[in-house]
Image (cartoon, rainbow, N blue to C red):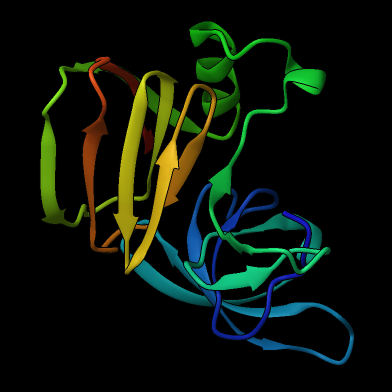
Length: 174
């Protein structure tokens, strides 16, 4: 992500003893460290964590650098220059490297999922087709290589757009 986590934001910890856990930033300390309420293995702990070891997961909308349009947090667009074409194995590898267990699904045209939540952090990624997702009022259409983080307990819905099936990789926090 391009911005430092802020107080009140939901984050994933990507290093240290709490790696793979999620939490909420309670305060940015004068030292620059974050006071994070960590949800780890069924217990809640408070920890001071260096910001380089967290990845924001919140659903807040923030302005991008050019201020042309808002950017949705947790949305990743495939960078073909960096990663090559958005092939299934390349997308799967990136999700697995982030600590997600990945399953493949194919949704035919007309498939829709009404608003629901999950008890785990997850990522919805698209290998091919177009998948419209709505998460807490933000609507985005995912295309090949795109993915959207959906923190546990976050209301969201989805539907296949157009006449092409969607091949989806569903990442569940391992």
